[in-house]
Amino acid sequence: MTGAFRDRSHHRLPDDLPAAADTWERAGAVDRAGVRAVAAHGLLGLTVPAGYGGGGLSLRESVEAHREVAGHSPSLQSLLVVHGMVCHAVRRWGRPELREDLLPRLARGELLGAFALTEQEAGSDLRALRTRLREQDGQLLVTGRKRWVSFGQLAHVLLVFGVGAGGGTSVLVPVGAGARVRPEQVTTGLRASRLADVTFHETPVPPSAVVGRPGFGVPHVATDCLTVGRLFVAAAAVGVAEAAIGLAAAHAAARMVGGEPLGCRQLVRALLAEASVAAEAAWHSVCSAADTLDRADPAAALAASRAKFGAAQAASLATAHASRVLGAGGLTEEHRLTRLDQAARTYQVIEGPTEVLKDLIGAAVVNQARGAVPHADGVVCAQEGDDRARTA
Amino acid sequence: MTDIQQTATYDQVRTRIREYVLALVGLPDMADDQPLITDHVLDSIAAVQMVAFVEGAFGLQVEDEDLELRHFDTIDGLVGLVTGKLGLR
Ligand SMILES: Cc1cc2nc3c(=O)[nH]c(=O)nc-3n(C[C@H](O)[C@H](O)[C@H](O)COP(=O)(O)OP(=O)(O)OC[C@H]3O[C@@H](n4cnc5c(N)ncnc54)[C@H](O)[C@@H]3O)c2cc1C
Image 1 (tube, each protein chain N blue to C red):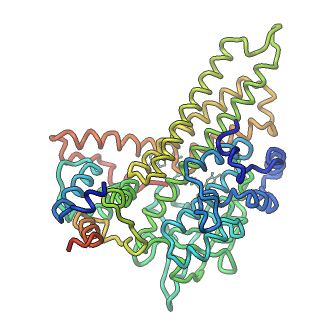
Image 2: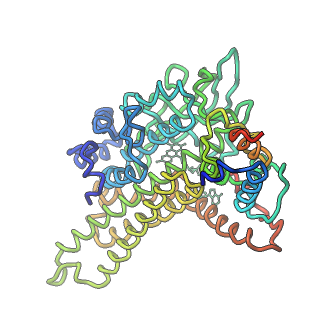
């Protein structure tokens, strides 16, 4: 599974990534040394323009890296997702002074960024955000609590979404004295991703730290970031699916049952066939979504949602099938398949739960027909006003 | 689509924007001052698509300072933003 990515010599994965991933998973934590190692390999600035010290890769090129990293360490890949979303937001919507100041440091990994959208009462429903931004003496004061912030335990800046005088707003908040950071309980999937529960109380930030204009953080900046995030998670889900298929295929080739390899059994072959076709299809949809994003095609947000939905399904199918092929060995807690299996389950929830994405995608399909049907004028589903605000 | 940028008239811009927004909303007709975002006529993904559409269709760069709700909440707002940036007013 050496993609185009590995051939781009200036962005190689650390050689000891597989071993390091095992250590992180056992410890339930990617450590700072691990973060420094991936930063040294340029993985934290993949898509940041070269002028800011990044790798200058297109999204189409960068998804190769996400796919490959996730096959070893889904937890580490989630750092590339959240840090990548912050880089994207600063580059696309940050004021020039913010860009000049932060992008080079983010690209080098000197500054780690994390994405703080979810709250206790606001997961997939963005309209329920309770974090408040209040202006006072030329500053913004941030008050609220964010849950499940991936790598929030290590991050230096958080992209926080809240509500201010101008409406939904996103702002970069340094993690310092004004923020209380507590580790979340370790989750089964992405267990080493250093999740944090972060509380702000009147934490001051300068107005230049607002990313996008007040009123545009939600939904614009949030949805724009989530679009990129969905693409990265979709690529990761393909990496997870492929890694699971790799483990299952190796076992099927080596394990003898009734005098012949397991892989001679048709039912076992069927499991591998279903999984590998699903993974391949998902990868094509990831690549095509990446192309639409690189072209800034208006259809990109929908394409990324479609790719993420499909890839998460493929990862779940592939890991479930691999689990059957691997038998008891694959069910042990420290087996690599267990990590992949739990990551697949997590991908069905994060960056747009599967049900929310199906709803969005299905609505777009219906909408297209509605526009073409004259007598459908004014047809609005009862729950529409509600559903349309959901994106996360 | 740079031909549009070079030769577009105010009316052509409005027509193009109306067509795009109506297709996005999935309705045959709608008032030009109907709030799209604040009335939740558009979902959040569609709201983001509008930024990409404006940039792609008219060869413009939407800057941080353009990001004001009044520019994106209605067809009128979008027409104002685009014609302003194209110098058609
Ligand atoms: C490992 C991990 C890492 C995470 N990292 C981050 C992070 O870095 N930053 C961040 O902000 N958040 C993060 N999250 C939070 C994640 O984004 C949320 O869990 C997700 O948005 C879902 O929100 P929720 O958990 O509150 O579930 P809810 O919103 O309560 O939804 C629960 C379930 O209800 C169903 N559902 C919800 N809405 C609808 C609907 N409209 N239609 C149909 N069904 C629906 C879905 O099945 C969904 O899975 C992380 C979560 C995990 C597990």
